[in-house]
Length: 393
Image (cartoon, rainbow, N blue to C red; front, side, top):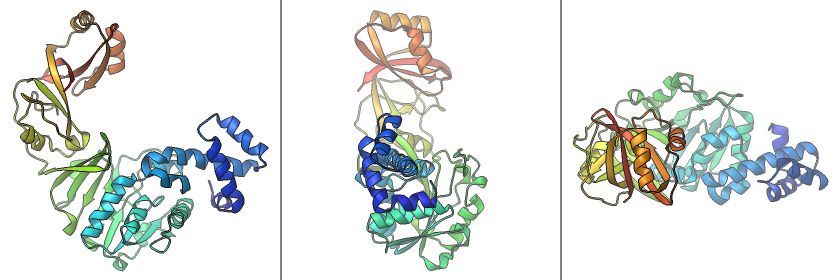
């Protein structure tokens, strides 16, 4: 996609091509291209329209119905914030009194659009010309062009004195290749600029990768990890007066948020395996809040380095899955295979923490047959390789 192709898609002819592409997207790509060409759509416009139609189809999971009118790139869609997450962040900013916001590295505009919907005046800055043009087009399509304006430029050159808060989502993929960047110093803007923003604008929020090294969290900042329906999707650093707690795990089940907070450095007690096993949500694990969850569930760890919790009772919690444990045995493929055969188990769910075994290889090696189902947990107990057998509680 280039600027000329984007401009062509925004004409009346381009809109017709996008509508035609939407009708054939999701099927055979060659057949879809042939259908557009037979309808008289020029080859270049047809290719651009089909790419957008496919990206819009994928984007529904992040943006809902609004995806149908958005302009997208593959890399931009992968890094874009899900709407439910962006809307919660915008609401928190608005509740903190933010009225003007700089969105540095605004990408396709997901966070800027959410803030604008919340009544915040947003100034977006994006280095890539095509992505910046798409963000502006997305603001226009959403009816928010007055509330969310986008300029193509260097985020580090933006005068942050114009706003009372900053949101920064540094690019974590290399331009041109799309490869992930794991070294924060290679982000764009670079990490030293990002962490220095809070010194210039105290109300700063930085979106970071969920796997961020905890040692990189600035002193005094709140670190939040967010999961959506069990998938860990992002982390964010809330700085200055926006920081409320040291660590936060936000677990979204549908549109319903559940929040667990704590210091991030507490340790859960260790004890034997018990009747019920809790598998904490990944946001809880990454936020180092397993000890806080253990306190809520009256649970213990069976190994101090493995984030599975064990308790005598099953309690409903949004922060973990619960399994009723029927068997605990030292790992032995021969013994496990025989036990599952005797119980006619033909379907297994395999969970693992602290085990080097590959679930799919184990599944093949078990040679399952039967009509019963079970959950297998590959882990360590007091340092020893162990398998637990159970059922969802």
